[in-house]
Length: 77
Image (cartoon, one colour):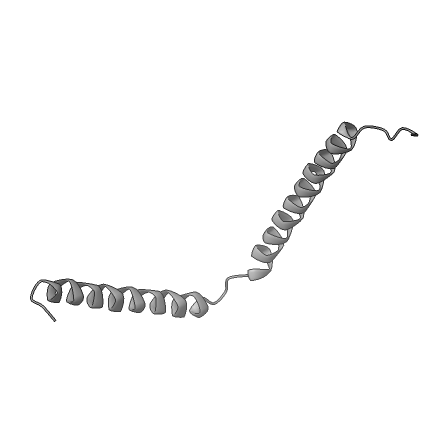
């Protein structure tokens, strides 16, 4: 390895190691929390999912009706 790339390689390795340890610590802390009721969080995400599904349904229904209106009626030859 050349002398120009050595500091960059060391920097990348140290950064990766620090990031990996932070992620691992955050992951362990996430599951170490006791007393946090996850049912409320799950219900909030369920409500958000339902709202997004209803909005998507309304959007696609409006687009379908808009496209249906632009299609000409068939005429007999």
